[in-house]
Amino acid sequence: MLDSLGQLYFAGRWVTYPPISYAEINHHNNWEDSNDYTPIFTIGWTQPEKITDWIFTSSNEEQYLAAGESGAVYGGGSNAYYGNGLPASYAGFHQLN
Image (cartoon, rainbow, N blue to C red; front, side, top):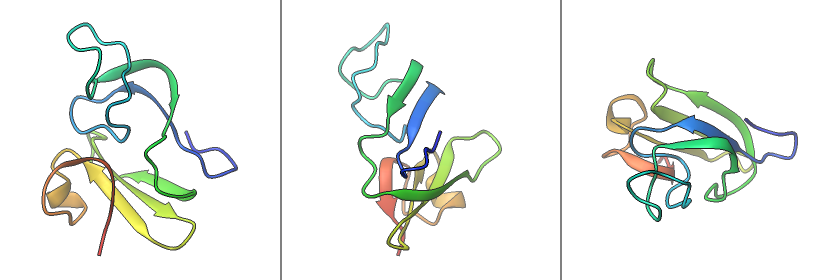
C-alpha cells in the first residue's frame, strides 16, 4: 500500500527477498531475520525516500520497482536480474543505474 505521503506499507507473504528486510515480523522458524509473511500492514522503513509509484514486475509478484520523489528508480525481489535489470536478487530497495 502506498499512502498519499509517499510511505509504503507491506502485508502478506514474501517467499524470498522481501522489500522490508530484517523487519523482525513474527515467523514460526526465525524471529529475527527476513521473514516470509506479515499478518498486518508493516511500514516500509527501508525505503530510501518518498515513493511516488510502485509496481510489481513479475506475474508471481516477487519482483518490484519503485519510483522515488527525486526521480530515482529502485528495484528488488526474487530473480530481479531478469525483470528489473539488477545484477542479482535483492531484498530491500536498490537504485537502478
